[in-house]
Amino acid sequence: MAGPPSGASAAPPSIVILLADDLSYGDIGVHGTADAPTPLIDKLAAQGVRFTDAYATSPVCGPSRAGLISGRYPSRIGVSRNKDVLPAAVKTIGEVFQSAGYRTALFGKWHLGEGPLNANRRGFEEFDGFHYRAEKYEDKVGEFLPHFFTRKSLDFIRQEDARPFLIIVSFSDPDTPIRPPAKYLERIEHALSPLRRGYLGLVMALDEAVGTIMSGLEEAGLEEETLVVFANDNGGPGVSDRCAAKNTSSNTPLRGFKQELYEGGIRVPLIMRWTDTLPVRVTFEEPVTLMDLLPTAASPAQVEVRTPLDGVDLLPHLLETPAEPAHPQLFWTHHGDLAIREGPWKLLLVQDSAPQLFNLARDQSETTNLAAAEPARARSNATCSRGLIARSSTPNGPARGVSRHHPPERSSAVTVPRRSGSMSPARAGRTPSCSTTEI
Image 1 (cartoon, rainbow, N blue to C red):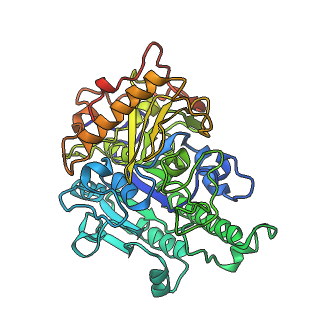
Image 2: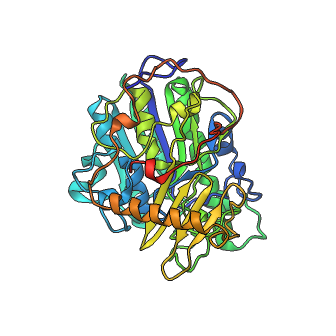
């Protein structure tokens, strides 16, 4: 395992992952929205790296969280539906960090199993939250959940314990039910529909919670010693008929919603900040995934991962210019639909529909189907996609080894190449190939 990046403290960093629930790609300020007030999330983006092409591992909550927690494709570990649970044999990020001596906590939505499969039995020594739906839990604790989970998180951060910590704050907002306190509604444009106003009130409360936790880290003197991640679990449901819980979220400029494999269902906000280590005011424009959070956090923490992973350590891609992209291909499955992204190309195979091929570099809204104009590429990607699925759909089946992502000879002395701007390392003369990628 490589050591901490150059410029970082020799001590293992703490890790804070802030995960929203059903927040759309378009409803944060740095993604261009006009009516979503997120100044504190925007501030976090300005202090670190914003990923423009970050993906959930599924267009629905449970499998997406399984991918984040395990660092693996959900289909590989037997989690493809919201009702599936995370198998006991699958190691979680909590178990990995707990075994390395970290304090671990998860506050909020778990959604990966109850009883013996609950979070406090899966590596999180402190857990205060619920399995699936928030309403009964909020009524039980008697407090607006963003406030409750923020308070629990600050108490955990402030504990007098010298050990580094891993904390996942898994907010249940802005998912339904839409019932923000009046103080947030009063600050939202009254001309909007009641449901949209309520949703934006929850977004405002989420933004406030993110800022409060960041202030807590600063007050504790931990700002430079903590890798902070902000992300969302899947695309926003908007008002899609495919989603029972509609929250008016806007995925603009992306097409589609939660439950779909169009970009609006799987592309999500992702921000990383590690003060004085990661570059600032940077946009990273290559495909990454929430599976990458486990190996990315484990690398500077010098935490040994003894389980196969599909995610990769993103730090070399942020601090160096590797010859290879983080992911030559990414793929998704959902209820029989398939999608694969290879470079800028994305093939979508929806049941009972003709293949759809898009060039996301020119058409991120997926408006122009190029399958007829590029038949050879469409056929090649279709074959590739089916092959990837076949090799990756067996629970606990073969996966790429950890050494693929953490080469033992990788130097720990890396240099930040740029402090601001866009990052998309040149890949001149290189075309991603399905046949050369081991999945």
